[in-house]
Image (cartoon, rainbow, N blue to C red; front, top):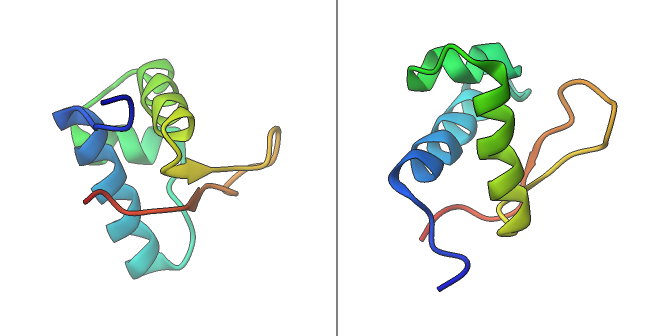
Length: 74
């Protein structure tokens, strides 16, 4: 199914949800990468783009820290 998440995508989504619950704002690419063990912001960006494609997150292009959770992983 198109909307199924990989293990890494699920991990990233859960990390974003937890981060926002604690801090009330989303993590930067670098912060998210550190949380899930990735050193490359471009890899984190790719993960978030896949999550956006699948309808789990959204953000305002060109604006920092506008990442929003649309739905949690089921």
